[in-house]
Length: 478
Ligand SMILES: Cc1cc2nc3c(=O)[nH]c(=O)nc-3n(C[C@H](O)[C@H](O)[C@H](O)COP(=O)(O)OP(=O)(O)OC[C@H]3O[C@@H](n4cnc5c(N)ncnc54)[C@H](O)[C@@H]3O)c2cc1C
Image 1 (cartoon, rainbow, N blue to C red):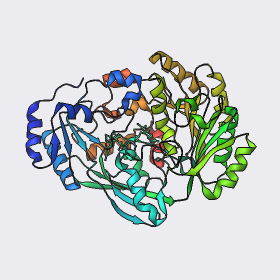
Image 2 (image 1 turned 30 degrees about the horizontal axis):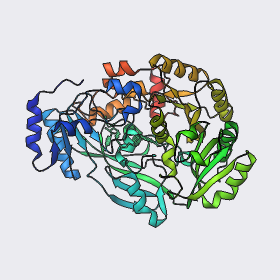
Image 3 (image 1 turned 120 degrees about the vertical axis):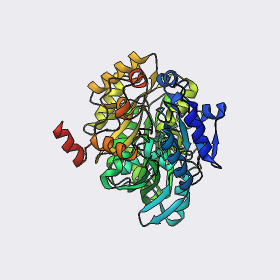
Image 4 (image 1 turned 135 degrees about the vertical axis):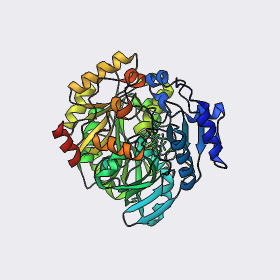
């Protein structure tokens, strides 16, 4: 439970808002103080009763500046909200205060050859819809592209559809620039480029409010949705590795899913023969002859091929991959969970099969292929019936022994999560942009000595990234 804040400063903040849309209605506060953390059985308990005191919806960057200035003056904690699709509780106001919803601050503000710039609250799918007529699209998007904002994706997400070709957001070159607003009595705008964008990326809004983003674009190919069956999961995994290692084959998602997972998607199940595994894939039309050859080489059969978003199932195919898969699985059994485990680049196929075989009695494997730090890896894990934190910790520990690196997706704090290095650059930048420590309280490493961190910690190693020059220097200093 968050302690109620002194109502005085909140009243003063509300008085400053004038015509800016806001609410202190209980139902609104309850709805807007949540994200999709209920996917985690641990977070369902830990996040209960943590509510904002006021919900504010600025319609422009100028209105946002007014709100932020007032929060700074009255020392009100701030949680920024985009589409609210974060899964780790990172959008929950752990210490109350203001939830500032930026979904009104929208629009593409510029497009150059190879990049696009947009305001933070723009839905990711809207950016693609606007630039596709020019023959370009974003390099990658989360499976929530139709609901998530671009600012929320860069602050809370990490990869997605496109990552099997381009790598993850953190990989150098995948975020061109970020503009952040400081939290001061007179908020300033700071532009970050180069390696500096990663100071703010995936920091859950703890070290700056992202107001604009500039991202690289890629050619918008004629993407084909493919549902491919394989009699055995080994064929699915082999195909997935082969097609991703064929760098000339253009693809956007490659998701091997072991039997019986196909049966947990009522929309897709009828396409896959009983007892078989599948790969869901988006491939460019011109790459189809190569894809067909690789499918045949690995004993698979293409059960459906069609234009993006026009399959005989209800949703775009990518909404049966990445974070969406667990959402579908939990509709059958709310206790099903998985881990964000990263299979190693070296011996990738062997590693996938070793884990699959060792955990055969626990549950079937679900993974997405992705490039990271210049090599091919895969992300996912077996999917199993959660019985408690001890079981989760034991599985985490064993997967690490098998060479996987694990992020904890059952915590809203950066330290316990382990996906984001929080080094001196992050801490210093936070002091610069958020001198009163009002942003995303309780989530950054400077502030995680709290009950939430303790209740959600697992023996996870965190992800290994190739460190930037500055981070390497710091490692040496430690
Ligand atoms: C079904 C499902 C599938 C998903 N699939 C993927 C996937 O494929 N890839 C992936 O990377 N993630 C995925 N996610 C999680 C992912 O974080 C979100 O989908 C999305 O990127 C978040 O955008 P949002 O606008 O909803 O942000 P929110 O959930 O509103 O916010 C996310 C975090 O960023 C902060 N934030 C929001 N806006 C700003 C801003 N302008 N400035 C500073 N901080 C801000 C919030 O405080 C919060 O900490 C999935 C989640 C779900 C529920």
